[in-house]
Amino acid sequence: MSTVTSVSPPKAWEALMKGNLSWTNADIDEWFANFKGEITAEAKQLAVGGQDPYATIICCSDSRVLPNVIFCEGLGLLFVVRVAGNVIDQAAVGSVEFAVAFLKTNLVVILGHEGCGAVGAALDATEADKGKYPGIDYLVDAIAPAVARAKKKYDLATCRSECHAEAMKENTFSARRDLLKLSPVCKEKYESGELKVVCAGYSLGDQNVERYEEEGERSLSNGE
Image 1 (cartoon, one colour):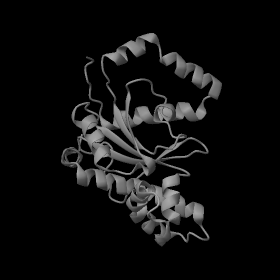
Image 2 (image 1 turned 60 degrees about the vertical axis):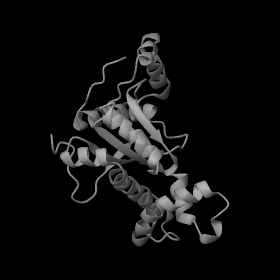
Image 3 (image 1 turned 180 degrees about the horizontal axis):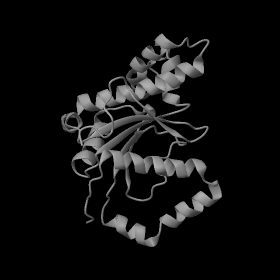
């Protein structure tokens, strides 16, 4: 089995941003040729022995949001947890706890994205919609607090795109709070500074990843 190494949160974030810059700047044909070149027989064989991810990514199930592509990373380097609307439930928490406690990832990125359908459904949800799709109802209810905060800033009828973007951003903050509330090990490591939980958004238009920060949030280097 491969040896699990630990990468500091600042270095992990730097690597992610470097990869995203490669993705946004590259000629697509050239980029895919290089990416394909990284998935060598040797890399595949190493993956058989275990994984050694340096970051955990919590993102949406949307087929346009592919962390290993967005961040230009190959096999075994990112631990990815995917659920529509990047909603945090017990299954997601268990996945993150495994990555943090056993794979030693010290950076968790909660990645929202432009045009998120789950956020859109929560924006438009009415009581009359409930009951037909219980699973979707669960997602909508989980995203509802973020939507409520967004609607205080923007009128949905006249500023839909701004309201959607704000709700997506607020939903990443909600996900971080839910993760730290539901996971004692993540909360302990976060409060000690060993673990960083970064909120970010992915633009489908220009493919950039932007970090979101709440007021009073500690920097990535704090606690090191």
